[in-house]
Image (cartoon, rainbow, N blue to C red; front, side, top):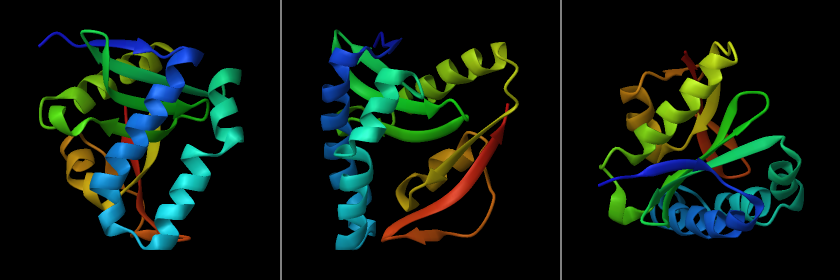
Length: 154
């Protein structure tokens, strides 16, 4: 399976948000209250400021492509905070998320970045621990969104 990792352009963002929402609903939403699901939808999927951050360069999103099919995404802010890591269900456990992380880590190391941060959903915690992230605090609850703050030393 030859997967290509590329920075998404503005025209590819809508496909990315559809993928994010679909994967969120299947794998993350079961751990969240209705309030948390609505908070995620409003803050990430429908939030124009968040969407504009990609157009303005405050956020960068990379996509994993298999034969021009978008199968995974990762986004990172200019403050080195990872905000979205989602892989299509059909491609789970094939190393796609790891490939996405390797790609951004190489770029960040070139820029002398030493740490990245993220807020891990309960579903993703085992994966993040497996690739070297460490918990910064206990699980938090932001309007129904459950997350554990984490960091990775590069």
